[in-house]
Image 1 (spheres, one colour):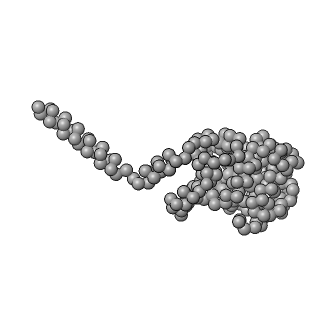
Image 2: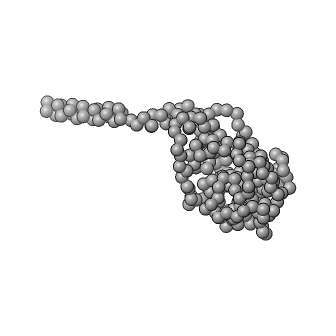
Image 3: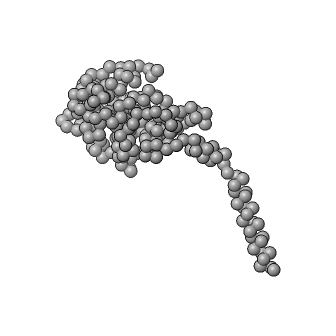
Length: 229
């Protein structure tokens, strides 16, 4: 009988603990769980709201960053209502760039990348059938920021103000020596990532800390851009 009383008391204690733990579930955890239920999965485990988008070429596989790549957290002053107003495209690229979704305010930039993603590389090309790196950077800067650039990577490098790597901002140009001299250019997005037309995979996103690009990086440049609409 004593053993029976002891077991009953123990069960009561553990049951009470379990009930108490459930009662103290943080409100934020519940809100996050409800938010996740509302968004189905799509490409490579990225979660977005269902809406028509331009198919992309395995974006997560295309971004082959080193594990040692520096990740800089982006602070946010937004609240839950700001997150609710973000588009599926912002959620997608926030995960690709490893930043908070509220930080991606320039939706025109990511709409542009989405439309061009996977376009094959073609030397001298400037259309959806094929585009080279300087044509892609020039088209992006013109369509998103309203500024006209010269046609080649070398001339774009010459006409911009040089900035250090740790001073790069969204919309700056990043230059590389893949052959002799300045031979490749991309547009910086933030947190070490940049978009460009690569010879191997076409329009994509890469990271400056990847071994290939870190060894060939020349420097960054800033051009005078019109205000983002």
